Image 1 (tube, rainbow, N blue to C red):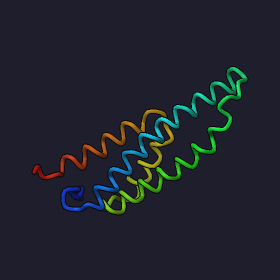
Image 2 (cartoon, rainbow, N blue to C red):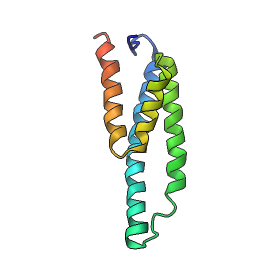
Image 3 (tube, helix red, strand yellow):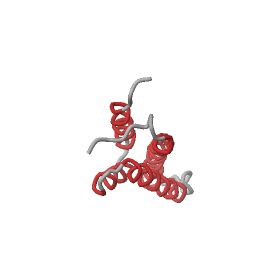
Image 4 (cartoon, one colour):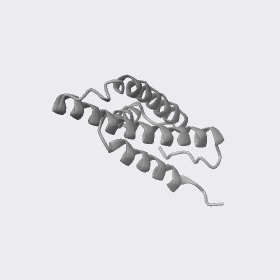
Length: 111
């Protein structure tokens, strides 16, 4: 199945933009979470002990953004789940976000 173009569907374009923003935020948030774990267990420093809960909330928003885009784009459930799980691996959400954006850009019709 080909990916629908965002040129013809403003709701799909909006969902893509929201996904891109959330993928970036979750990617940064995951790096902060890794820093929190290193500080806490490596150096017994509790400066970022407050971060895991906001990170969890942001991850849930990322999952919702992925589902929103996936349903509008007609993705399969395994593809959506794979993209959702990319938010659990440091740096992977950045790569997946670029891959998804490139997928939509490749199907766009130039103006």
